[in-house]
Length: 409
Image 1: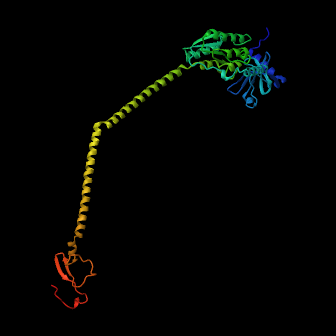
Image 2: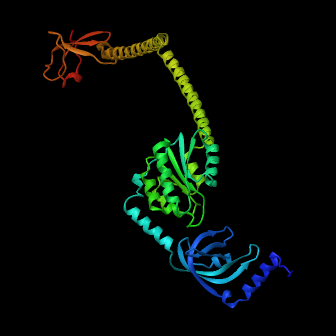
């Protein structure tokens, strides 16, 4: 028996053979990008395909960081690099160092054509999107019974909203038979399911794996559904025609289940918050009512007749004091006025004037007071009134008065 090669030895031999082939160490490969994955490390993993033929490819971060063009599924590209063997898995692959856009792949071109057609028809219009019920009682699911996506959905629903009933309308979700079966699964739920919302889901995969959800018949069936539809197909970066036709797009099947239901933990928290808010409101209302009652009591106390009477009594006392003070002031003022006028009258009394050395002169014959010396003839008899008595006299000639003395009486 010939010497047998171990698996590792054979893979190592093949790797060395590939490395020694000059053509494979500097080669350009043209193909359509499929199953593009960008790792957290920065490396790119993708497949180049032409029809049914595929070539696994990888580009390390050293080269991806220098790339200006970032390919996506469906892009037709020219990739440069070397072909080598990944001896751990025993597969050969292209180790690319440059990727250039060469055109649009056939599947991507068909995707864009159908998308533009249905969009022009208004199938994707926001106005026709229906709201998702907040608390669904029955949730229909269109997917494969064996799919991991269905198990993911059930796990999410049990955790978030176990009150909802789940009704599976099983169908293949990959391959040529999948589109008509997906349409029938939708029709079954619409006719007999009595569902509040329908989830159309499947897990991730390449553009070929997801192609059933880029079928025109599937898109039209989703748009025509009487029950609101949430579409969760593939991973977050995957987008299908079914996503545009659905009432709501979810990035993954699990996310579709989350969008379809409320979270019971959040509901409990919301109920607790509402309960706390209610008790706070009741306490605030009671405190406010108690404050209003106390204020009303104080107001009633101020408006009490007894308080009013006490206030009026005090006002009477205050006014009596002011009246008494006013009367005293008025009497004092009047007394001052009387004293002033008495003094004025006293000063105007002729006797008082006479005491100051003045005298009243009157004619003896008629008693008329003489206010002037004009017109008084010598020899006229006069009476001179002093404060303490009266003298009788006669007017003399003023020129001869000083020259002699004459007894008049």
